[in-house]
Image (cartoon, rainbow, N blue to C red):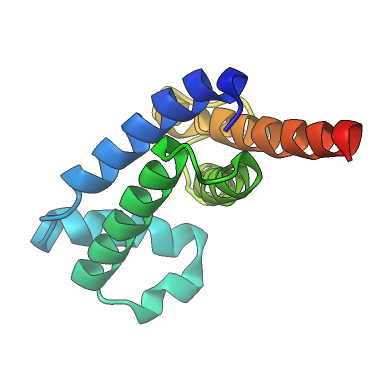
Length: 139
């Protein structure tokens, strides 16, 4: 990991790891609500029962957070994971009714929390592009 990537990876990694840890025990209505929202954006997730979906999401978040926090995980790989995760959240924002103002990409008051996840995509792409540019300069 480049030293210049450390602040980005530490801040985002700690946040995502904490999010995954907080979802470890989700069950019942909380898991069903999260699952329902996810299915609205990605219908293929319907194949997972809500409790199983919550556990899978929790594990995915913990794995991504740990990868971002681990210095020997290449920034290219950590950035790719972060980009993919962020794109899933952006898809949730774009496809969930009520998250955006009518006929606009501008978030509604309810959508601000999800709209900010576009930053995760930008951060992931930054890690990836910087890693690729760095390799080209020195190979």
